[in-house]
Length: 143
Image (cartoon, rainbow, N blue to C red; front, side, top):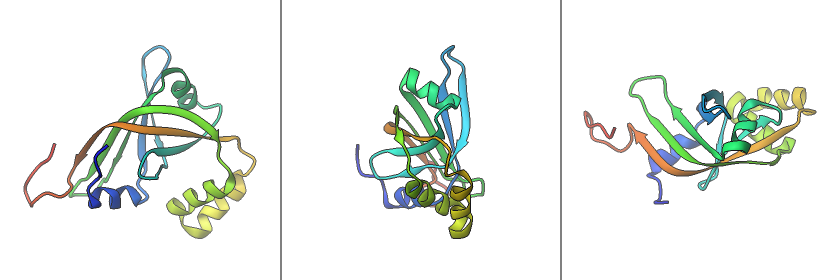
């Protein structure tokens, strides 16, 4: 993978809610909003072990993630890639993610209220990238 532009990396570090797309066993799409973490190599999404998105990833091994703004000027990063169900996520990792999205007090409270949940990682290794709204002169379009 080529290095991402600094403004794309900065965007991915912000707490945007993403749309995770997986494929059900019968071929129908399944799309769900998620929180994510990006480590520069792969995305990690936390999920309760028994949910549909985990079953879909375990069966098909692919997923797409779309991260976008809802305010103009719009920005978007969409990746398609190999996906796998990882191991359980500990509460330290979960708290770090929750604090990113909910702030210090809200994140800690969220994890405290859900500490007994069986949460696993969904890891997505991007194979294909699409970005819009980054590094362009005013009026240009990269889509």
